[in-house]
Image (cartoon, rainbow, N blue to C red; front, top):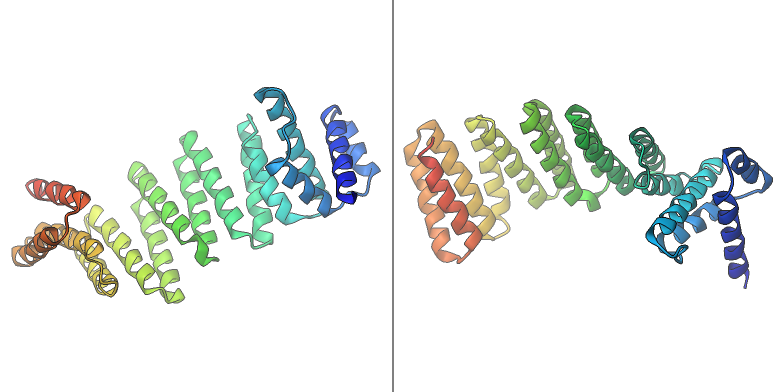
Length: 294
């Protein structure tokens, strides 16, 4: 019964908030001693509560008002965890670019204070996408770099880190700033090495080697790819190794070392015969065709 009464009070508060102007909203907040639990309950209501309208437009209006109310209480009670989650959700409801970016920055800062690295990553990623939409590539790269740093605080964010690195790579190609993305790869590699994750380290060397190959540093690429070969070879899986052989083939062929290039080609062909993999077949066909252009 207590929870029901609490829920009714929150819904009354929401309706009062919805029909009030800014000054009245401030008086509403000051008139009651709302606590962090109220903000958390309102956020739960926003995420999985009942429908408030007969159509999408009305539902959107109530949803935005609910998040605004939740954020206002979270700010007053210094509930940084709720603030981080709510600000990021509210940003998606904002039409104004400046307001959306301000909310995402607030979400990232609040998440950092509470060490909520998944929220920090998500806020910085959304901010990067916002910058990309407005063709602000440098700002987008900086946001992805902050997202990557957030990933270094939690092993559960390894896949998100790879997404950030790949996004940085695409922006670097468009912006001509390979030094920044290479530094990001090297920073991530050092983090994975310190974590003791040998498979993750092998994958990090492979990504850095691919980046160096793409930017013309064939000697540097070979060093990274061969380190990856040793580490990923411990997995006993042929397909990741086949892709490394393909890249090493390109690197040695580009350096004019036909003997080593031939070794990797022969190994690659043996692996191809061993595995009926359409993706590998297509990659090898494209590789062989591309050798003519080197």
